[in-house]
Image 1 (spheres, rainbow, N blue to C red):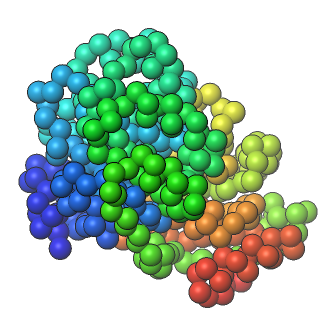
Image 2 (image 1 turned 135 degrees about the vertical axis):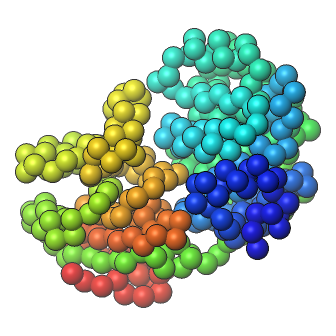
Length: 365
């Protein structure tokens, strides 16, 4: 099946082809016809399976550029994800006269308010900044036709449940509602069923689809030897582009300092870094001016950068789901990728959970 079989418009198919996307993923094949048919959806699919395009393609197709109101609202838990969805939306909308506003903290609110006075069709926002606009009465959501909550599990994990509910009080009640999430627990279900009408539940089960292109390995080490172990591995791998995950902001700060001292081309990203600086760091990484991006889990969701060849878990993740989300940053769009995780004695229980979920033992280096 290709995108034309899903009745995707030819101008959008051409843009997808230019981006090297020729065939829909499973989540896209399932969601696109249902969204075009105005169904409400609760969709569960692993990171790296193409969820963003699964909702952007049909939503952009449905928008009438002559509308003088916000017809689509997309809510994302983090600035990074909001920026990334905006980048994808702008590419798809480039063939149509559709205006997009990205609204998140750290960006000049007055500039956003000025833009809102013009004709905006899609708003992509984080909860805090959107509520700020609602309080200032600078945004009108009464005619929104489609509401999308992306990474619903992260939204709740980060404590945004009350904010989401406050926002929905201001959104058109007769809307289409789409919930997308990598995991769906009872909390996500409760929220989703409360705000959807007769939703279609979609679950893409096969995690091996996202894992099969990633060569995984682990290094058994100690906290004292971990830094030298990392340096030995990356010297041996010589990755083209890599993300190195740390557990805390302090650990990321220290690792950047230590790697910088050894001459590695690296930058760190976490929530204490100003938005302007975070955008500059991500731009450098995307443009391959930085080889190693040191990150906390703020970057493990929704981050889709072409060309990441390696993922290193300097600090082993705290759950099997987090492991899959992290290493899912590589091995995308049909490319091969590699991951290497550094495991100390205290990580053995989670390692066992990861291997059980994957269905195989990860090779030891």
